[in-house]
Image (cartoon, rainbow, N blue to C red; front, side):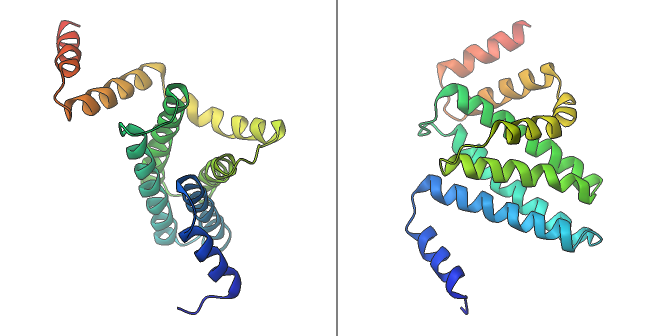
Length: 177
């Protein structure tokens, strides 16, 4: 493989990095690719769809790891990240049916800021407010009821695969309502 020295150094650093650093690198790399497509291929729908699907797959992996019993992430943060995964799912689905270049920016922003957080880089209050402002309209589409149903489904699926007593209790509660 003919990599320039920067790419070779980056490849070596990632191959020797821990889990969080690899996740940060992946999100940062996806953000760069999304940005490149936004700037250079805004009229190429296939290219836009391909990069959004790749981003979506990465977020599916993140979601899967969050649902794993081995996750060491505190419950509140885990819940917030699962909500973000749900947002990425909905946004990516919407993008697939109506691909427009302006819908890429929110994915870029989320990936960049989460990558910074994983690397321990704090984002400024101004940056936080920008994210809030950009996502407020889109997040408003996800009703409180949809969030509850999504979490119930995730919980049911998680425990169903384990075949635990909790699964029977959840099903009994749902049947009762």
